[in-house]
Length: 331
Ligand code: UFG
Image (tube, rainbow, N blue to C red; front, top):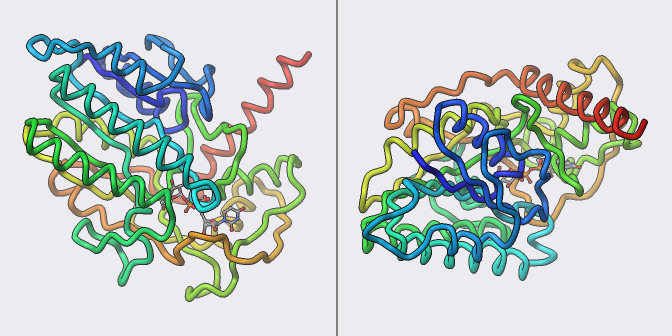
């Protein structure tokens, strides 16, 4: 298929683009590099740098009788829970307004398929665990609210304009694949931050909240390997049906507390990791664990890299390699 990938220089987008190329798809990437890296763009993809909505509108064109692309995978987004509480404007403008423009471009160009990066943050604090797609959506932060608003918009576009749409609700994505991993200018995610402590780039990790209603008092998340996530995108693209918008949760199905993640990082790196207790971070729910039963049953998806130590090991190898590369570049 000929595919337009927004955010393909970012973490998840670049891994997915790599896998799409490996499977023989033709990939055009659009990214404004606000959080992604030009280095992350996989070899073999055509790369256009600039505003996602503007470029997508240009690239997709307006001849609905002859669509230029078979589908769009829309990864480009602002995606930090904490930041969204402090700067909601960035999220409503950056996520919702951009995606509404993209949806219009998809409609006008007659592009038949869309796979959208939704999130577990659309659910908010769940009543039970694991979370299914039928559970209520009550986001506890603007990030989740913007992604939920977009999911609603996609649903109405799919039905009215015969779009084949899929929203994939990612839980906590981690790990790396073929030189593509978490490499953000400003890092706020738990696993890379803990590994930065092991690398000596950070003095300690702050544990945001030790009074959550969990076994060790720290928040629980479901960590999914980025390669398993990429496989789900390929399956979603194939399974999408015109006029339908399907939503799938994607996680490994097991929850790990912040302390358990730190212990896994200590085991993998063989190094002690200094940690301090800190207050809860605004917008965070206590526990987010996915039921991915629907994706398993309907898409034929099966997460293969579910062992937390193995996920951390891939992230660790990536960060060490990144350090070696930047050291070599400075010499
Ligand atoms: N945490 C710490 N200390 C840190 C960083 C994080 O204790 O320095 C905690 C957080 O409070 C949270 C957990 O570690 O309880 C995971 O936090 P991340 O920032 O790694 O990830 P989030 O759960 O906040 O969010 C991630 C993605 C979202 C997605 C969500 C879905 O960034 O896009 O997972 O579960 F919506």
